[in-house]
Image 1 (tube, rainbow, N blue to C red):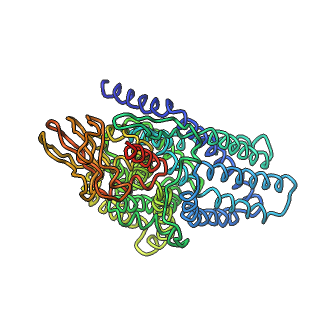
Image 2: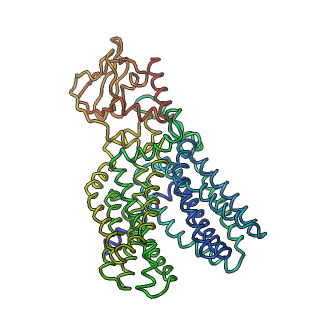
Image 3: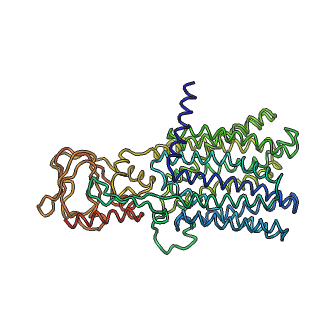
Length: 567
């Protein structure tokens, strides 16, 4: 009973963290409404396509939309990283609302069918980078890493619910109104999303005060003014497009995450083919039995999402993601060994329960590891690995069945994916250690220069910082020396002298060493410890890499440097 109580409290705590953040709450409401609208629209569009051209039209149109999303997503993520993400999301919703509204008019007046198909594909193309932009925006709305994880867990649960509520709403409406009216429901969901996203604000604080004090003023301005990193200009489009994939490939942890996503996607793709045969040959329900199987797996996914909410504070995103992929692959082996209706339902329930475990890592880990200037592209690259593997699985499954048989194919997919996933467990444990918030991260956050930094960047600085213990009377910096480090005082005190004169005394929470790094000049003062002092030392490259990439942070540093040099 105590375990259930603890899990319930963990779930409530996750929900409270998200709902207490006004900006996150608005993003979640926008996301939930638009996903419900999208599914209702997709249901109505599928019915319309079937009435227009039969099953062949549905299949061809669905394939066209799927390919369009896979191709357009990474391309759109380049734009998401180059422009204010909040504005980009609003523009996407506006365009989708106009296009779907136009499709509604064409269907209502019985216009050319080809236009409805074209508009459906274009809507998919336009909407494909929305999630990448949202993934880049959310880290700017959270205060702590666990809040980011909680937000993604809540979003995953909302998406699971919307996956059922949307088609159900579409089916219900189709029973009482015309198809084009359901299209307008989706338009209304986009308008709601626009209103919610437009109300989002990023409160960025710029440290203008002296050492040990924030001196910050809340700008409270729209994210348009705060968002977006600064990248070197002049990169060609294909290099811009490749940055996300390159970032993933060079980071071993992210590469493993992408491959695990692809492993799950491959199982998912093959399962779309296998379930038809399962429905016909094992359940004896005919092809329509696929709907029952999807419903079983979907209900289990909602339940799994509730469990995941209790895992937010565990610090095991990487390991949980690997366990989730095992939850997709091991049931396939059991299904191949014991192909009976009971095993079929048990396997699909386990897969459904495991799906949110994968999704939470897939959503959160790229946000935690990617830098702000490429975060949308990194998210898009990992998502492309998932979608591409799904397409590959769906294409390979019929060939496997023809070549080695149905049960053997299911077993082969399960064994290969499970074996690979087991090899990643050590790497994912390393990833979890990397994602653990470093010591003194709150101390760094209290410094005006670092306050505007996104949580992933701040965590990276925390991990890069070196703890240094310095006895009393030791010279830490000497006037005229090369500048190589930035220092934060954890405890103790130091005196700062210049040209033989005492300039100031710094204590716990203060910092020094920024002038030589920012202005690229020799040290302008000598710093000597007055007592045993504990310092955090951040190297030149790490300091400049974090500060130079964020406009507010660089401006705060420049203001502090100018003020200190004027003394």
